[in-house]
Image (cartoon, rainbow, N blue to C red):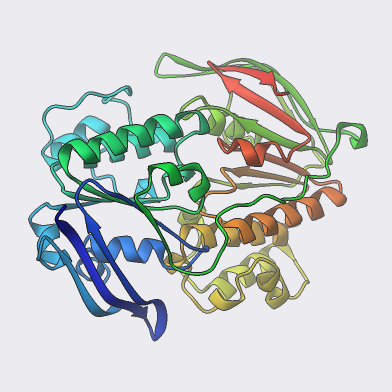
Length: 419
């Protein structure tokens, strides 16, 4: 088989900080290559170099070594439409306000979809948007497709089906697909080879359980009774009833588009139900971490953002210690908008800690996190729970949900207690 992608002694740095060093690989047609490494190891950077976005879009990077796509530079391949990139942050890539407008903008006329193409982008779930971007990349004519952290967006129930489709599509169309992913154990059977950017482990076998338990609850933090919510004549939540106490650890799981984020917004008081009763305790100070926290960070360094929150929340702890606990000490001087998705997630959790809130709500907490960062996250959640704080998460990561004492499954608008 012919070699489509050739990388020889590739090194990439930004502001004198080396991200990738002396990487050499060759990729043949019909192959799926998986690139792994710890949070911040350079996986996204590599995908952006291969697809020409560095240096075409991101100008401050220094690239050494050789890289070619069909004998062309990545920039030439990008301009000829030979490469496509599916980003980890889906919201950063949309031009249109609906999927149909997006298809028109990129010149795709014929497209089959399981989502409403005329629905506003902000009414679709993160997972639905990601799968839409993935499908448009596949049918758009590119021969090299780079996919960033798909398991952060594709629900547990769909992973095998999606990757069987990717493998079949790559083989029948003689494509190269490059996947950047932490959780290689779930997709390794679909990979022709695995490229490690550092020595980090790809499996998380020994994460501790969370401490919150129903019999430790002292009082009710949030109560929902017969809550319904309807958007654009679509019944999203149907008669949700639940009581959440201080000191509980709650995980809400379900398929892409089932309404997990909508339910979190109800619990946080951000969204109002179409019908039903919501009571949030008056003693509650609540902090919610959305799925894409970077958009509410001010444009400043990590350290400055943490200090700003500390002043607003009257936090008198040591910020340097906080950043060290959350594995952000090496990023303290970086602008928050230069962080990887995983590092931005850790910063958002550091801010939750600084806020000293009694309820912490997190949408997809493991998005972009490697094993070390997941362990940090669980340990921090346990610190919250030790102090009778409440932790509520929405996740499609079933292995992470199983760490919680109480698990709910959201399906077809109904909430059921998990086993």
